[in-house]
Amino acid sequence: MNQVIETILNHRSIRNYKDQALPEEHLALLVQCAQKAPSSNNGQPVTIIAVTDKTKKAQLAELCGNQPYIAEAGVFFVFCIDFYRGKLACEKTNNEFCITDEFTATVIGTFDAGLAMQNMIVAAESLGYGTVPIGGILNDPQAVISLLEIPAYVFPICGLVVGYPKDYSQVKPRLPLKAVFNRDKYDPNQKTYIDEYDEVMAEYMAERTNGESRRNWSETISRVYRSKGRRNIKQAMENQKFYNH
Ligand SMILES: Cc1cc2nc3c(=O)[nH]c(=O)nc-3n(C[C@H](O)[C@H](O)[C@H](O)COP(=O)(O)O)c2cc1C
Image (cartoon, rainbow, N blue to C red; front, side, top):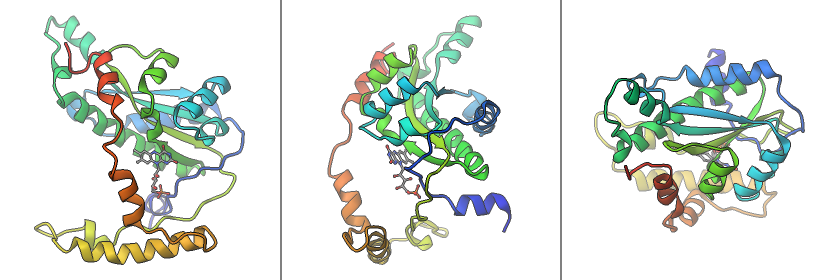
């Protein structure tokens, strides 16, 4: 096993940080690693805003649903889907700019941002930092857009906390490999795999909560999926000139 694989297999989200800034050269290095991720058509529709200002971090912690580690950790990276540069390229070459009219830009941009973020996570963890992605940034996209002065055709899709861990949480078990690693066709035995995983997760929760909870995966995820999700995302994207040329 090499160090890259060890880092990946050791991943766990950290939600407890020291109030300590990262060295400036590490901020640049982490963004450089994120930027090295593959990109659809080399469009590179991703911009990363490193928020280190304490007031702004505190505001973002609240906006993301009161997640205190955003304020505590050294840096909060805001990953944005960015088609503004693409628009400028179209203007420069006298081409019409249409990619944001339909869903494609969102799919491409979200995928590229995800790849970039995962590159950063691996790089940060390999340097000994803790990380946790923050989807809570979508609670109130409009407020985040105003706070960070994000222009049209750019949309903050996910945040990433990076900092010095105060403690290392446990590695969270995943679904059985056979559930997600199918061969030559889709494996229909998913219910069996879920039953297996629910037992594993009940044990994990019992250990994590000193016996207070045995909530399994089905119970946890159904609490999320029974909701239709955030309704304000589409409107906020339209305000950023996605879908409404
Ligand atoms: C897109 C995305 C958004 C997430 N948003 C949050 C969040 O807002 N707050 C949080 O504490 N964790 C968040 N997480 C972390 C997940 O809860 C975590 O990755 C998952 O429970 C698996 O645990 P692990 O990362 O420790 O293996 C997010 C993860 C992803 C990929």
